[in-house]
Image (cartoon, rainbow, N blue to C red):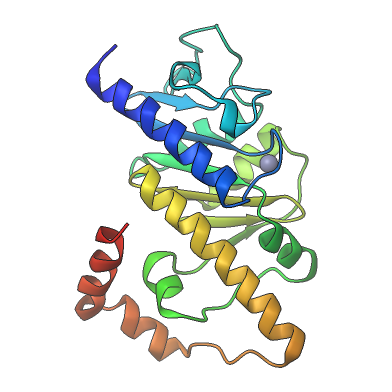
Length: 220
Ligand SMILES: [Zn+2]
């Protein structure tokens, strides 16, 4: 096993446990993957995240879709991950979870507005995908169609998908989007949320704010 593969398997195992610790999935829900060159390593089907061991992540060829080790079946959401990597080469990790506040938000609204600096700097505009049956190529196509324009997609009545240049970034985006949905719902329940203006949002995303974003990521 190459050193890069060993490292990726350990990282996947670490973030899978973090996802459980943060309450972002329940039971065997959700799936995550990371890629090295043409191979993505994805969570095995039927496992709760906290039970996955480093050697159980399933290698799948991104270009052909072939499963390179049949010891375990890949997650039933394998197509969503495969199509995501195929359409956006900048993506190196994908995190799909079922966070409660994100799902609750999609039951009542579609556009999660810009509310605070971390959200503007590290996530940006959050996309929305209408409900379709999970584990189908229809969902995989719908996610692939938007995963270049957005690094985070709310899935109606279902959950959240985030991508990043590494697992840390994808995971952090999942946390920020879930926090955003929670804050929005909390604020909305007691009044009218005061949002960031377009100028305030653009200022955070501007070049002079790049250092702010980098600093945030280095703290992780
Ligand atoms: Zn799901």
